[in-house]
Image (cartoon, rainbow, N blue to C red):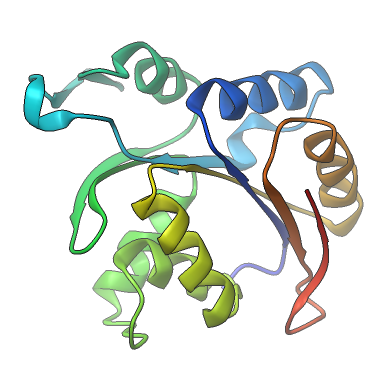
Length: 181
């Protein structure tokens, strides 16, 4: 489990999540401390795939430009088939948290693999269920983790974007300490 604070934002559209990442990047937030997770649309109508080309992950599908750009910026990338949600893509440190949770057999009743990764960093189960529902509804999650001061700054930046929901989770507190929409 990380000792960092975490902020999780929910976006209805990939363009909004992408703009939030750009805003954080402009504000000199450490991009290696960002994760994004979502799913591609209409995968049954288009070829979807990914492959590793050296140290860069390549992806094609209806949102290939979106995911390809993030996989170039963020550390780590993965593709999961999550029951009830579908094909989910993730980039950033969340990938490691998911894999660690799955390898450690961290089982939390009623949550997905994504949820197990979020639970492993201290996100409460009721919040995870909302995030799983957001993913099922084809929304995108942006997750930032860092020190309390940096996450407070990141939350302020994210709160000025088109996020539907923004929650801050403190390593010192068991529940979210604030929400903005």
